Image (cartoon, rainbow, N blue to C red; front, side, top):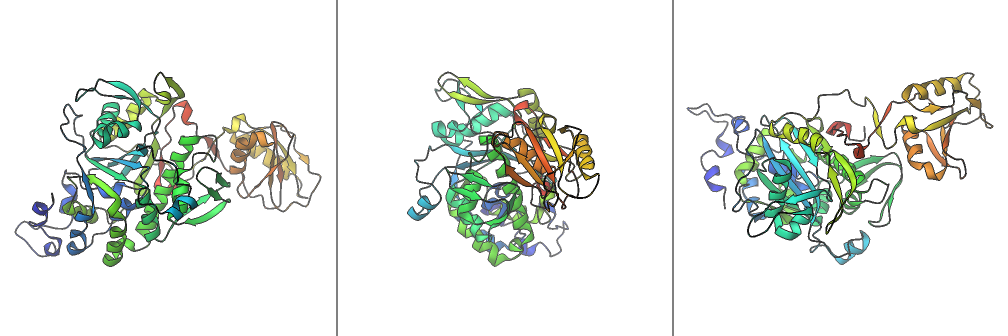
Length: 484
């Protein structure tokens, strides 16, 4: 075990006692050795390990629960280490410990590909006050570096795991990003479901229904508390919209923020016995590099007691081309190398991915308002309401007719966005600008959407397109990704 040398000199029970050096619990925060790793497995139990500050006796037994791998074996010519710490978090499609009932209920019966289903770089700042999470699309075009008798060759980044396990995965990520990976953490389906269950579920919200026949996800619009199996369906779903993996990564980031909120606000991390139960339930299916142990857990807990969702930020590698076809590899996702380098440089230099923006400055939507044609109809007896709504939508960027009319029904209680089913994404973007509005499908309506203003109308909310195919990198703080 790698940790005993770190435990013996400074067990946490003795920290409050005076010493010649005046040691205090905050001292480990300033060390440069990585110790934030388990917090980084945000999609599962690792978030739970981050903020505890618990007793040594509770933590000591946890090290033995973690399966070990050596992803850094024989690695040479690695990127220069920066400030802070970088953790490569991979989620695999391992399902060996899934019961037959769970396989049927949550649609997990397919054969695993033995590849990484999720891949993220989690950067923990040197002052331990910020976590930056960068998602790497699973189908990203990548180049495997030459080594161990293997020539360099193109590949989808998630296939590096199947070809060479954790070691080749780390090599490939470092080669593509020039970011040195300090720790490696690997989780599977079992870890994920257990974690969500033992924390009592995670609350997520959705403005529109989410239904995916592949995973079995079926959530109506609204707020839901998801337990392990449903949470797994939520983060795996790729067919609820036209954005496929990109939309899935955004949902994963929202879930990560919600899990952080649950772990840090529920008291779980402050109760040693509850913490022990949570970690024992999930660590049996986590794999980590050999350098992470009990000492790191203790330092991590003390350093991150005050961590909160607002301390985290999430983004996805900017994309230049979604359908980049490579002979022998297939359709891949091509990064925008210039804009991606800005993100990776920020990680290397321990800088935030974005400056602070006022919360909810603009709601992110799938279709830019400038592309959406709108006819406003006043469904109330309030004179001039149609003109006000038309002007407000136009000021937000929507292409209104500028000629609002009265609706046939002037007794509407709720605002309605009527739309042709072929323009459903535009309708969702318009509805996001009208809080509380109802979507209504009208076949044959055509490309111009209708807003039937009801008595519940209060405001037009500013919206902004989020289009990863244009190479933009949208950075969202954890407290912006939650339900509030």
